[in-house]
Amino acid sequence: MMHTQKLYSAYCKNFSKQQGAVLLEALIAILIFSMGILALVGLQAAMLQNTTDSKFRADASYIAQQRIGTIWADPANAATYVTSNSSLSPALPGGLLTITQPVPGQFQVAVGWTAPGETALTVATSPCAMAVAHCFTTIASIAGG
Picture 1 (tube, one colour):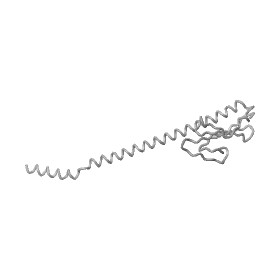
Picture 2 (tube, one colour):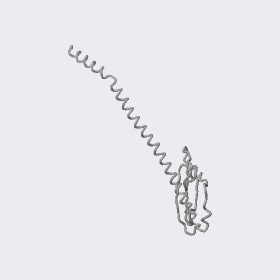
Picture 3 (cartoon, rainbow, N blue to C red):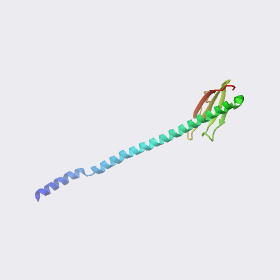
Picture 4 (tube, rainbow, N blue to C red):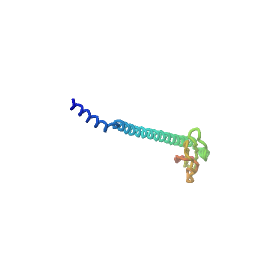
């Protein structure tokens, strides 16, 4: 009986040194898991922002190509399509459209926009001389324009 009591006493002595180790390991595991979840949430936010930006770029490209198609369809009145800083707000947030004719027969379409939460910058260089945060430009040569 004495021998069993000594073993039990030695076991309890070693056990007291181990107390709290499981709790500490669980807390560290929760910390690592939480860091991973926060990283995934940040990645999700970045993907959402990039998706929104790419939609605005695609819309700007579509609008510019649509305007060039309209000019191509009516080359006799092509000069009447020249415009400066026309509003595109329903299609693009803070959207502006500028169509210029740098040389006869050539049309330059610039579509600019400012996404919600962004600051519009005035870019002094041509063709984006408008107060927008982003600008898409394209040039087309149109015979008879």
